[in-house]
Image 1 (cartoon, helix red, strand yellow):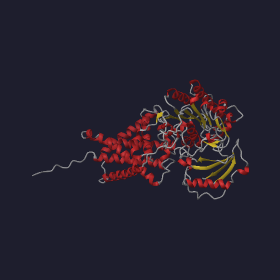
Image 2: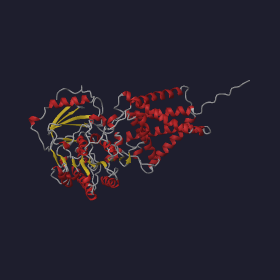
Image 3: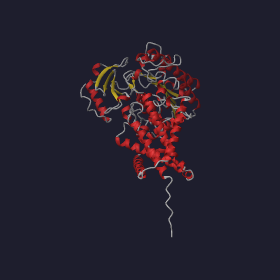
Image 4: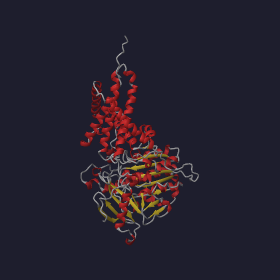
Length: 604
């Protein structure tokens, strides 16, 4: 009589189901954290938000499945090994959730710990891992668990396929082989000083001698007498300076907004890179950071780190430049940064401290040293986009006075004397770089740009400095009519003999004096705590014509006008457009970019 051997259970079935469910649980908790606060994810359409969730869960599940398969052979002998992937994933989830909770409520978390205090988190993580690992081995899943895991994976697969099929290869539109290109390939160094108002610079006729070197530099430079930012936030303004596009065009108003689709590839550093330039960004973590902005194929080095991301590059063939690809990389970085920190492998960066604490961030003197080192080591033309932070408020600093203690008094926080000393410090740093260029023989092979992201206290209706020193003092002179930050990329391309791409909306300053009637549009971002439809991050939209500014606060439906202080090319009042005309243009502008303007009354 033939007896069939009893069917052996698959030793990997339960560990597989646990690993998949753990992956989706982690994806869901991270997704929930970001979708309920100000983030690039929270602004996506509902369908895209759902797709991001399932694709992220599917990719994490695939990664854990690969790990499980690697453990399959030894797991035949030591069955417990098969539960390592799910235990590791759930322990990481618990750690991140705990960190989110404590930091959100008490501003205490992994990133704020140092020294031996990190051991506490190390012990907590090890305890969680061991406890979950033991519980997982005793876990009995319900009979239909496999159906649930397969259903989740099926939905994720559909999501991945829809993204893969619709993805497009984006490029800058620039042809580096064009025979019409000029042979000029000078170095380009952009020195951005945070929050500089022209009214505080002696180079722009301020009564105190705050910028003695810049006052000399402007004599051999192209100077915009009346330049204005396109955004009130550093992230949005630097995005404009790199893309030549207005904030509304790219949907970047403040951190953590990101570039999407073709905007991620259409920018100045991408064009320069295709021309053979080495491209480097020396900014500030998170806020002036091409990686966090999702500016792709542009910089070789960003804030002292290679731009190459193994996570993103591995996903690019499948997901292209989709929100899912960016979110998966974000989730992976958040987990790895915390683990590396608590196990003393690598310090975790605190974005708030990096910007607001002068003692925690790279100093401006170190920025100068890094720029000089890059120039010394580079064997090809180099583009350096730098952002100096001593003039960042409300805590101004300098190498001579340091930074004041934090204060709850707003007037003390924005101390004007500290601000002026910080400007003097920036002026000295510009001089140091200029001196190196002159002594090394590279001065006449370098374009030196001085600019800022916004005015004092994030103002967009104040004049800002924009100074461009071309080799041999070419194009020296002034532009009296209004200029904006997005004019910088087309101006640099014009000098290099590169046609301005259609997607770049700024205008070259080498074409002559801009029109006096030119309308400059600037966006002021609102507080992250007040983000809500229909205008989300936007607090107000401003238009400047000649010396007059018009501003519509879209959150309060309030209208104001005023005059730019110190404007040097004033128009006759009779030639200025009426208020109602500009208001209607602002409404049309918002409607053009998809905003519902029904809450705004039709008249001022």
